[in-house]
Image (cartoon, rainbow over all chains, first blue to last red; front, side):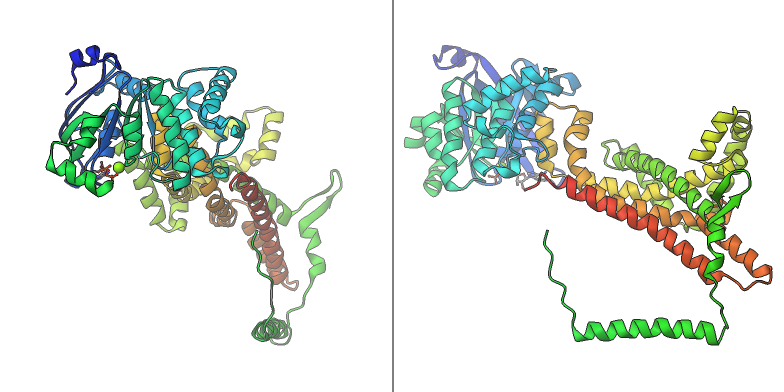
Length: 257
Length: 299
Ligand SMILES: Nc1ncnc2c1ncn2[C@@H]1O[C@H](COP(=O)(O)OP(=O)(O)OP(=O)(O)O)[C@@H](O)[C@H]1O
Ligand SMILES: [Mg+2]
């Protein structure tokens, strides 16, 4: 498991940026979605989280940006602890970008409006400055010509690329992807994975929940396997896929490949 | 817009014929059994009358119509305000606000409106208004102020009455608007709330920029219906002698039957019905236009 030292000694990565320790989350219905789960992520690292349905992958990501409250444990992101301080909580959700399975673009706004919104409201940018950033990002995800379209006029793949641009517009320190391609038609999955791989190459810190093992091998630095809200095994991509240590990991990998 | 072609079937023809027959039978009964003499010629002078100094001025029925319009307008504005505030309270994170909104809705929806009218009327008109000396305040205003107030609301003599009636109707209709706003806000998918949250918007920014605009599309149609109901329901304040359309029609019915002239009961109430329909149908039409416009950007 990486710590301060291993983050610093790995030439690919910088300092520790996400520190989750002993996270436990019990839902009101008694389901224990996270059970003493810990993970440390270094700056610039791409961590792929896999695991069977219901193993707590989404819950983990949602806890990281405060969408769910943890019952026990500690989350520190870039030196800011996610505690009861309103200021900290807001700082963290502004610094952590999230991409959802169902895109969640705002349907009443154009692509431009979607991406400008938080830049203006949260970062206090002028309309002009925000639009400059937006257009640059849209160019990057290949959606520049669609700035004036409404979400309903776009394909799923296009919507998801816009959603990624929207999260990036806040200049987040960490990006979370929760099955970003699961709701997409097979033929457009590639265009979204391509954008994500580009981001990874540029050094964005990413925690990615996905079933796309090709992406994990190509763009991932480390794989984490979860089950029943706990970590079963983790390790660098190549050894993890080629020689998983745990029997449960082996079985799972056989099922999905 | 989907529009299925209208096709008239034999059964439709039979039913239409039956309706016409029933109408004719009713007119026949009026004439033969009750010896009712139609006298539509008497109605216009209760709409407008000629004043020697001021020329043509509204008479009872049109005065009533104007009062109904003023009453409905102010009630609608206030009810929308109350309903939106209470509707948002019902979706609040704070238990106290949720309970407050819930108590309001339960209280209003489970008591007969007529009872509410009397309670509110007594409470507002007799207690609060007297306490605040609204009457004295109005009477001591300049002439321009009072004439503007008369035009917008009611003349000084009936001002407190009018305000009580507006408050009563607004509080009553507000409960229904509360539920419309609440269900509109709750109908916005969870993903929208979460996306706005993860972008760092404050709860208020999220409500204003993301949730309400989407809830609006779902709120407008039932809201328009409720506002039209407000126009109809405003008739209820005739029981506290606010001189709106229904009250004036009742007065006129009483007067015209007393003076020994042939009663005008059907002419009066058919005229009042037509006036209400004019108001409500116009509003429906406007609401329909608004809805079409709101849905324009949706694929
Ligand atoms: N809001 C909630 N209330 C109650 N239980 C929940 C809630 N959200 C998730 N759970 C439960 O918590 C457990 C973990 O759910 P989670 O969504 O994190 O799993 P996941 O690994 O993302 O699964 P999937 O691959 O299907 O998305 C599941 O048993 C789920 O039913
Ligand atoms: Mg999930």
